[in-house]
Length: 386
Ligand SMILES: Cc1ncc(COP(=O)(O)O)c(C=O)c1O
Image 1: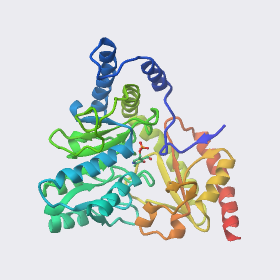
Image 2 (image 1 turned 30 degrees about the horizontal axis):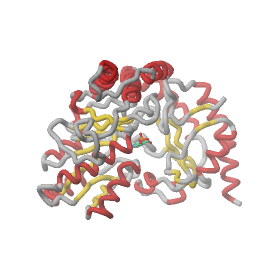
Image 3 (image 1 turned 60 degrees about the vertical axis):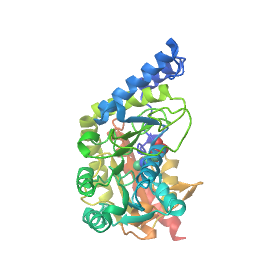
Image 4 (image 1 turned 135 degrees about the horizontal axis):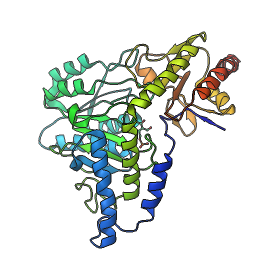
């Protein structure tokens, strides 16, 4: 049986969520129809909105259902950019190159197609974004900044950003902040109202619901331009027949993940610390984020003298599903852009291992990984030496 240790890529579907999802799929009705059946599925959708709002502490009207994190990131970034450039010239977008491609790529698209100017903030060697540099950029160019986008937690390294501080800095200049909280939801406390954010992206498949449902949380006071035009659903910001079954499953999963946060932190941090301790004894290994504050379930390492794809292949052969945490496009492993942004060499950024776990991970699975890791690293090093 496979040892699934790649929860950050996608978390296992929760059994109880699957049961309610199947039940919801059997209910017929377009949530926009006025007949009884339509009102039935509308109720499922609105109940999901309430539950998501409670899980992230926002107003129910601030929840815009989408297909997932990537769509939410695009809606927030392009939508805010266009909105903010309607009444003034604000071409600057501030972010960091440690972001997920769901954020980096729409920003680069705006640069290429809409004349945006990007400021990538410096990042420390442990993956922490330099907030003094953020303040300096805003002092110098605040009136020209369309938005700041910084993720709540990094999906590769686990590092946590002080989003409240980011919002405090930006609000002094009247600049809206978007945060990709896809990796954070259900893994660390996420409080939209308490953060000061304008917009926040979340997705369901990282907390145990089926892939294909997410949300953009958008503050009531804020407007964004829509990317998708049609029937005007979801405050006119996301046209298309609403996926009530997906939204419902997402909401139940998010609610459960948030309720489990304390248990999750206690269980995963003790397993991660066991793994870190064992890996520290391997020569040429490095824990990627040093003493930076990070999510409890993420362990990210680099190993001298090997390539991640070889190591992943060897571990997969022995039944371990782990990842490099780096972008993998068309089956080609690339150096991690996150580690490169943290100042690491291409060789180091191509020699990563990310282990991400959950409440379902057992101590025996971590012991088995530890036992397999030493020989797999040796073989991967031997392979890269030829
Ligand atoms: C930080 C982060 N943002 C965005 C996404 C994209 O989310 P989705 O797969 O729901 O489009 C992911 C998924 O890996 C992620 O980890």
